[in-house]
View 1 (spheres, rainbow, N blue to C red):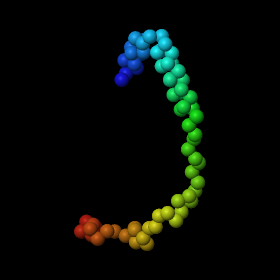
View 2: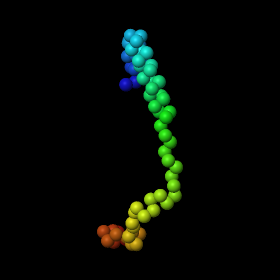
View 3: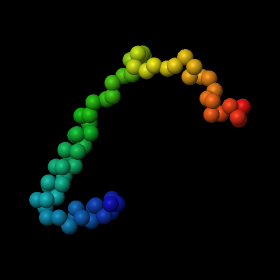
Length: 67
């Protein structure tokens, strides 16, 4: 829905419903303001969660023909 379509629909509403739409828009604006910011990343937070094999850097057997 484009802004113009939305505007057309809102302007066709009775005054009491326009007030409800206005209140809802204000609610949505307030809701987006109160969202908390993401937590600051901490270096080393995932340490120990992932295990890598010692040979992860080695070429794969499947690609030996191309090397």
